Each structure stands twice: as C-alpha cells, then as structure tokens.
Length: 211
Ligand code: AMP
Image (cartoon, rainbow, N blue to C red; front, side, top):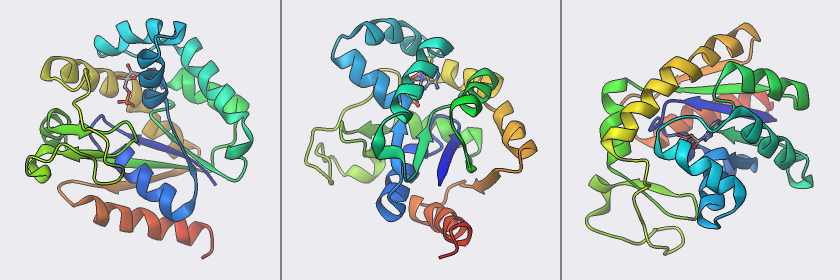
C-alpha cells in the first residue's frame, strides 16, 4: 500500500510514520528529512533548500518532485511506502499522480491552537524520532538510538508562523483533492496521545489490507 500522510506542521506525521513503519513495514519517506540531510552534507540541493526552509517557504516544486521521483524508483519501496511531507501543494499532488499510484491519504487533523506549542517544544533525533520537551524530564538523548536530541532550526516561533500560513494556503487544499479521489481518511488527533491516534490509523490499515 502506498500512502500520503497529510497534516499541518506539528500534527504528528513523523511520529505516526515511525509507528506505521514498525507495524506495517512501509518505507517512510520524508522530504523534510531528505532536505535536512542535504543541508547537513552541504550538497547543491541542500544549498538551494536551506534558504526556503529557513524562511518557512516551500522548496521549489521542480527540485522537490525530482527528489521524490528518484526515491520512488528505488527497489526498497516496491512493497509499499508512506510519503511524509509530500505532496505539499496541488501541483506536487498532480505530478505525484503521474509517476506513482497512491492508495490512501491519511489526514491528521489537529486544532491550530495546539500546533505552536507542539512545534516549539519539539526535540528531534537524526534517526527520525521526535519528542516534546514536556515529556523528556531534562533528558537529552534519544530513547530509541541514544543520539543527541536537538531543536530544528525552523522550529522557532517566527518561522513556525510562516510554515503554518504556507500549510493553510498551499497544502490544506489537498484534503479536498484526495477526498475527490475517494482516498481520504481523516483522523482527529486533538490532545490524544500518539498511541491512541495510531490505534485509529492501524485499525483502518488493517481493515483495508484485510488483516
Ligand atoms: P518538514 O520536515 O516536513 O516539516 O519540512 C521542513 C521544510 O522542508 C518545510 O517547511 C519546507 O520548507 C521543506 N519541504 C519539505 N517537504 C517539502 C515539499 N514537499 N515541498 C516543498 N518544500 C518542502
């Protein structure tokens, strides 16, 4: 099964993706992670992406679509994948439909009032795990791999405001896009812990895969 994970920054896409990956063995592809790895490695893509990411804007479609197209050509995705953070506008969604087949869009719906605190309190590990400072009790190491936790450069109040604007203006219309395709499954996340959100998603995935 090939899945698109949709949701505002801070909705918990990455957290749910890790849990889905573990249970359903779908390959997790995060365009944000790919860009951050390129920035860390000072690659040409990283140099282009950084200015957009720092400004809370979308990296140009051409660059982003090429990265995803290349990634989906690899052998490891043949038995299913999850796209986390792609597509992020209608152009990318239409492009994706040209080079891939998407079965399902999982939309994680969180009240906007909760997002700012979630994002600004987020601490991440390079292995992909993320935490909220309120649950860390001062710990600075990842519980999964022991790596050092850090705050993403773009997880600051100023950039977050711009990222949320970008989400509502450019990405939110994708809810309607996938609804019109009959592929939309929305989970209302609210203040529920990630395990409860995952239980709802897992039940839907099991129902669809006939398990
Ligand atoms: P994320 O880790 O998904 O929150 O992405 C971090 C940043 O990377 C975003 O704010 C964008 O600047 C950029 N980015 C990630 N995915 C995309 C995409 N599909 N299209 C354009 N820019 C993206």
